[in-house]
Image (cartoon, rainbow, N blue to C red; front, side):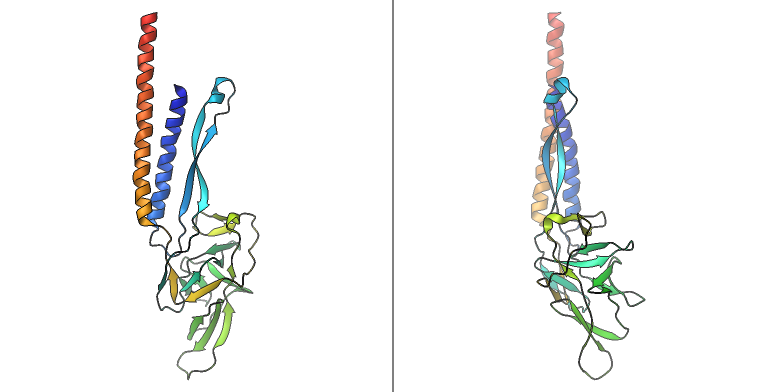
Length: 248
């Protein structure tokens, strides 16, 4: 009977964890470039020797992210960049490490350094990209940023840098607590010339709200089922105790 309790108890606990994941995905349904998190259940045997080897827990395992591209929305803002298809924008964090994002809502800080909306420095082919003041910029498909001085007659645009665009294998990527992705081996990804971007646009989240809501309902029913299983186990235990009392 305790086998049922092990499975139902751990199953109910991890269903709550999975509901938290789905809730997190729903909360980011409108977050630019967000990638939905995917979870799965698996059985983990209880290692303890003796009869406990027949018992097993249910474990919620994060299997990765949904890398399906989101819908691209035109914004008309010159510093908005959307990655078309597969690929990532490389950024540098405060500790000097490299990370990757699909959120192309960029800005220029007070020192002229190109950054993401969250403050991470956008990397170029030779390091951080610095934009001069009073310059209107345009981003090409290959990530090249060109600028033209405002207030003067139109002329040839001046290249100011090129955004580092990468496309590491998806099985070598992991999501950090900050929402950015990193390579599992810790090595910076190489530039991929096949990655293209669209200027003046942003990629939406790839979270399917309808599917997520259906998943929440399904998880709620699974949680209720596990609770009923534990109640049945308790009832069976009480009846078994009564039978033993009669026999004694």
